[in-house]
Image (cartoon, rainbow, N blue to C red; front, side):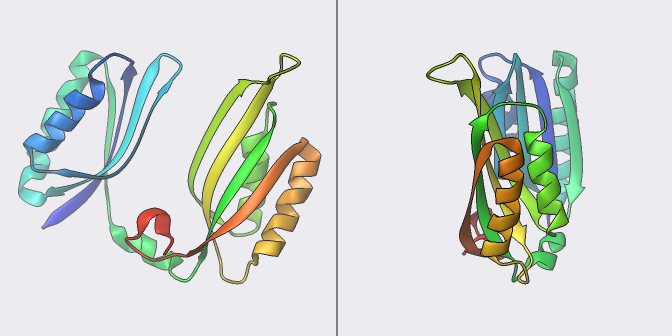
Length: 187
């Protein structure tokens, strides 16, 4: 029987981190089903959903725990796919945010999404130098699931109000209805 684990590994960035960690996972015939990996400052962070046979799980966890001796921080959390079933029939949206960087953008957008009953599935953010003026530009891309009672127009209207307050542009694009097991939940 396969078990799913959410594995988080963080540590000083260096060449070969992904190779080292995935070699351990492969040694126990485990599979990375989904992942996000990024260098943030001088640190490298890995977040993975891994499936592993129950009889291989303890060996995998023990081998991954050995990464601590190399200075990595590690968290392993078992998960059950049944929680995703509560979102079947919800609408999947891509939220885009762009504007001058300042404190509070992520919080205000996330707060409005929560107020509307939308569930955040993923958020990616970054900053870059603006072409003119020496300011930083903020960009955010989020995938959210919204209840079927929340229309795209209503979601866009509420986020437009937040965008006005924050002086950022916010776009909402419908991806589809949530389906268990499909990429990013959309079909």
